[in-house]
Amino acid sequence: MEMRRKELAVTDPKELDEIILSCDCLRLALPDGDYPYIVPLNFGYSRQNGQTKFYIHSAGAGKKIDLMRSVKRGSFELDTQHRLKTGEQACNYAMAYRSVTGRCQIAELTTAEEKAAGLQVIMSHYSERSDWTFSPATLEKTCVFCLTVSELNGRKHD
Image 1 (spheres, rainbow, N blue to C red):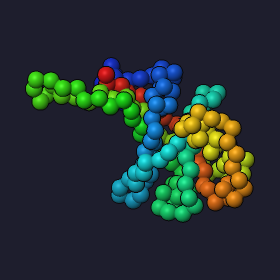
Image 2 (image 1 turned 60 degrees about the vertical axis):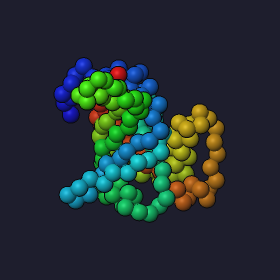
Image 3 (image 1 turned 90 degrees about the vertical axis):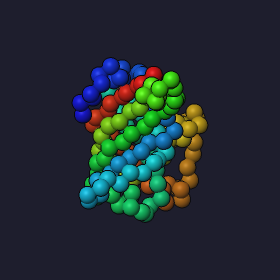
Protein backbone atom coordinates (compact mmCIF):
# COMPACT_ATOMS: atom_id res chain seq x y z
CA MET A 1 0.00 0.00 0.00
CA GLU A 2 1.42 3.33 -1.04
CA MET A 3 1.27 6.06 1.63
CA ARG A 4 0.17 9.45 0.30
CA ARG A 5 1.93 11.60 2.94
CA LYS A 6 5.39 10.08 3.01
CA GLU A 7 6.61 12.51 5.71
CA LEU A 8 4.31 10.70 8.18
CA ALA A 9 5.71 7.24 7.38
CA VAL A 10 7.48 5.21 10.06
CA THR A 11 9.93 2.74 8.52
CA ASP A 12 12.50 2.14 11.25
CA PRO A 13 11.88 -1.36 12.71
CA LYS A 14 12.73 -0.20 16.25
CA GLU A 15 10.20 2.64 16.06
CA LEU A 16 7.57 0.29 14.58
CA ASP A 17 8.19 -2.07 17.52
CA GLU A 18 7.77 0.81 19.99
CA ILE A 19 4.43 1.79 18.45
CA ILE A 20 3.13 -1.79 18.47
CA LEU A 21 4.30 -2.48 22.01
CA SER A 22 2.53 0.66 23.28
CA CYS A 23 -0.83 -0.51 21.84
CA ASP A 24 -3.36 -2.55 23.82
CA CYS A 25 -5.73 -3.55 21.00
CA LEU A 26 -5.29 -5.01 17.52
CA ARG A 27 -8.19 -4.67 15.11
CA LEU A 28 -8.36 -7.54 12.64
CA ALA A 29 -10.35 -7.19 9.40
CA LEU A 30 -11.39 -10.40 7.68
CA PRO A 31 -13.01 -10.80 4.25
CA ASP A 32 -16.72 -11.58 4.65
CA GLY A 33 -18.64 -11.33 1.40
CA ASP A 34 -19.24 -7.73 0.32
CA TYR A 35 -18.04 -6.24 3.62
CA PRO A 36 -15.06 -6.77 5.88
CA TYR A 37 -15.67 -8.18 9.35
CA ILE A 38 -13.63 -6.20 11.89
CA VAL A 39 -12.97 -7.32 15.45
CA PRO A 40 -10.86 -5.79 18.26
CA LEU A 41 -8.50 -8.27 19.92
CA ASN A 42 -5.94 -8.67 22.64
CA PHE A 43 -2.61 -9.67 21.12
CA GLY A 44 0.99 -10.60 21.58
CA TYR A 45 3.78 -9.43 19.29
CA SER A 46 7.02 -11.00 18.17
CA ARG A 47 9.72 -10.02 15.68
CA GLN A 48 12.41 -12.66 15.23
CA ASN A 49 14.83 -13.24 12.36
CA GLY A 50 13.10 -10.52 10.33
CA GLN A 51 9.69 -12.18 10.70
CA THR A 52 6.89 -10.18 12.33
CA LYS A 53 4.09 -12.12 14.02
CA PHE A 54 1.05 -11.38 16.14
CA TYR A 55 -0.65 -13.96 18.36
CA ILE A 56 -4.32 -13.84 19.28
CA HIS A 57 -6.58 -16.15 21.26
CA SER A 58 -10.28 -16.91 21.39
CA ALA A 59 -12.95 -19.34 22.43
CA GLY A 60 -13.46 -22.10 19.89
CA ALA A 61 -16.61 -20.93 18.12
CA GLY A 62 -18.06 -17.88 16.43
CA LYS A 63 -17.92 -15.84 13.26
CA LYS A 64 -14.33 -14.65 13.80
CA ILE A 65 -13.11 -18.24 14.23
CA ASP A 66 -15.05 -19.44 11.18
CA LEU A 67 -13.62 -16.66 9.01
CA MET A 68 -10.04 -17.07 10.21
CA ARG A 69 -10.18 -20.82 9.55
CA SER A 70 -11.70 -20.41 6.09
CA VAL A 71 -10.01 -17.34 4.57
CA LYS A 72 -6.62 -17.56 6.37
CA ARG A 73 -5.77 -13.94 5.59
CA GLY A 74 -6.63 -10.51 6.87
CA SER A 75 -5.62 -6.93 7.47
CA PHE A 76 -4.92 -5.34 10.83
CA GLU A 77 -4.64 -1.95 12.52
CA LEU A 78 -3.23 -0.75 15.83
CA ASP A 79 -3.14 2.86 17.10
CA THR A 80 -1.93 4.73 20.16
CA GLN A 81 -0.87 8.08 21.64
CA HIS A 82 -3.99 9.99 20.61
CA ARG A 83 -3.90 13.70 21.37
CA LEU A 84 -6.20 16.44 20.10
CA LYS A 85 -4.33 19.39 18.59
CA THR A 86 -6.38 22.58 18.83
CA GLY A 87 -6.24 25.94 17.09
CA GLU A 88 -8.01 29.23 16.58
CA GLN A 89 -9.93 27.93 13.57
CA ALA A 90 -11.73 24.65 12.98
CA CYS A 91 -9.29 23.72 10.20
CA ASN A 92 -6.40 23.95 12.67
CA TYR A 93 -7.75 21.06 14.73
CA ALA A 94 -6.06 17.72 14.14
CA MET A 95 -5.46 14.44 15.91
CA ALA A 96 -1.94 13.40 16.81
CA TYR A 97 -1.44 9.63 16.82
CA ARG A 98 0.83 6.73 15.94
CA SER A 99 -0.45 3.73 14.05
CA VAL A 100 0.52 0.53 12.31
CA THR A 101 -1.43 -1.22 9.58
CA GLY A 102 -0.73 -4.27 7.52
CA ARG A 103 -1.71 -7.56 5.99
CA CYS A 104 -1.20 -11.06 7.32
CA GLN A 105 -1.60 -14.76 6.77
CA ILE A 106 -3.49 -16.53 9.56
CA ALA A 107 -2.63 -19.99 10.91
CA GLU A 108 -4.27 -21.81 13.78
CA LEU A 109 -1.87 -23.28 16.32
CA THR A 110 -2.93 -26.82 17.11
CA THR A 111 -0.50 -28.49 19.50
CA ALA A 112 -0.43 -27.79 23.22
CA GLU A 113 3.17 -26.59 22.89
CA GLU A 114 2.33 -24.15 20.07
CA LYS A 115 -0.69 -22.82 21.92
CA ALA A 116 1.27 -22.36 25.16
CA ALA A 117 4.04 -20.51 23.31
CA GLY A 118 1.51 -18.20 21.63
CA LEU A 119 -0.33 -17.54 24.89
CA GLN A 120 3.03 -16.80 26.53
CA VAL A 121 3.66 -14.05 23.95
CA ILE A 122 0.20 -12.59 24.57
CA MET A 123 0.58 -12.64 28.35
CA SER A 124 4.06 -11.15 28.13
CA HIS A 125 2.66 -8.19 26.18
CA TYR A 126 0.19 -7.31 28.94
CA SER A 127 2.05 -8.43 32.05
CA GLU A 128 5.76 -8.19 31.17
CA ARG A 129 6.11 -11.76 32.47
CA SER A 130 7.10 -14.70 30.32
CA ASP A 131 6.88 -17.55 32.82
CA TRP A 132 3.16 -18.35 32.75
CA THR A 133 1.87 -21.89 32.86
CA PHE A 134 -1.35 -23.09 31.24
CA SER A 135 -3.34 -26.13 32.27
CA PRO A 136 -4.02 -28.87 29.70
CA ALA A 137 -7.75 -28.10 30.03
CA THR A 138 -7.16 -24.42 29.19
CA LEU A 139 -5.00 -25.30 26.20
CA GLU A 140 -7.60 -27.78 24.97
CA LYS A 141 -10.47 -25.28 24.94
CA THR A 142 -8.53 -22.18 23.80
CA CYS A 143 -7.95 -21.35 20.15
CA VAL A 144 -4.66 -19.60 19.42
CA PHE A 145 -3.79 -18.12 16.05
CA CYS A 146 -0.55 -16.77 14.59
CA LEU A 147 -0.79 -13.81 12.22
CA THR A 148 2.35 -13.79 10.07
CA VAL A 149 2.80 -10.29 8.70
CA SER A 150 3.28 -9.91 4.94
CA GLU A 151 3.02 -6.10 4.90
CA LEU A 152 3.62 -3.58 7.69
CA ASN A 153 3.16 0.19 7.50
CA GLY A 154 3.74 2.71 10.26
CA ARG A 155 2.50 6.25 10.51
CA LYS A 156 2.90 9.04 13.04
CA HIS A 157 1.31 12.43 13.19
CA ASP A 158 2.80 14.40 16.07
